[in-house]
Image (cartoon, rainbow, N blue to C red; front, top):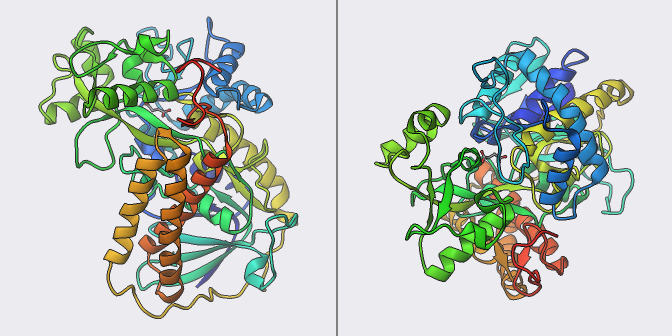
Length: 526
Ligand code: SIN
């Protein structure tokens, strides 16, 4: 089976679906989702989506907060652009049917999260992402121009390389003609030829042992572009959410939204002492890099398994109303958040770097766009501010859609593309060859390339990853492809990029903290 489409979209979170809906009036769209349409990072976003909606907030404050969190690595032009365009995009979401919470006067109920100097986070209770995903999926499923292919895995984007040409990383005119896609049922690989391709494959959380991300977050888009010799940047900036529920054995880790701290909850050590003021004057609402490091430090120094979030001093009825899912989850585990403190630990949550794109989501590869978490736009710098990512996704979906709607007719289908030609003949003789390496990648990344790094840890991580890389490439070449083998391969590529970029940055900045180049003043702003 071969498919031809004007717009190929890989990924079905807020970025991919918003883009698909915006281009669908102009041509045929095909969305490929590796799982079901709703299995996305977007769905897990609890807190919300940031934008300047009213006084006393203003664009300048949102810009300043974003840049401050980004530790000197944000692209100011992009920050200004995104912050200014966000309110329009939010209004669109509301017009499409997304329901954000409102106060009794009917105004949007805005909350605060770490790093924000004003209340500017729109939310739907504590399941904002789920509400957005619900509306976008419904619209996409009902659009006559959108074809949705679920439970299929994009293995690689197609470039000149697949026509037998040698493509170098410095090559200026790499073109993307679509993607090779695996149907796991029967291990069939087919070709989707596209005039334009958009990658919105989400994050990389599963490279780490503890993550808030669903199992699909294995860095697929980033790995595909890296293999196709496109430009990837800022991968050293892996964000750990400071507060995921400490519930050993549960994967993914359940998020305890930062909005809870925005509502007044505070962090405490296991013996009940507040500690965040020792690290940052903003206390429990300091930016994520500082908070996650402080928790890590407290746990290591004290030998504790977790810290606590304490909301017991807050109005219990309001807590239950604002955070119904957290309440329900915790009560099922015997924790009544109105009376008991919640045990939490940091968990891998978001990659700030990724596929380098311009202000319209265009990558270094012609006809290829990337938006959402797998892209690196310059907005987040060295540390993303809470709730800025859903905002970034809708702004870039709009901009990429505007550009590709204009351009797609000027791109022809490339009919010379051959069928997939790596012909493994056997299934791996034992699944353990894959699952063991998957676990090893997580161990290497968690122990050596986590919240705190060092030259020695990074060197060890690279040496060990290289062994796993060689084993997996060998297996890949001779095996009938399966999704978990492809995912493992992608995770190894992404792990390599994180380690190499971390080794190159010879300073501590934002989310990249190394013992060899510590900040002069731990926890200070850059
Ligand atoms: C949260 O609710 O704390 C997560 C939101 C985000 O990562 O932006």
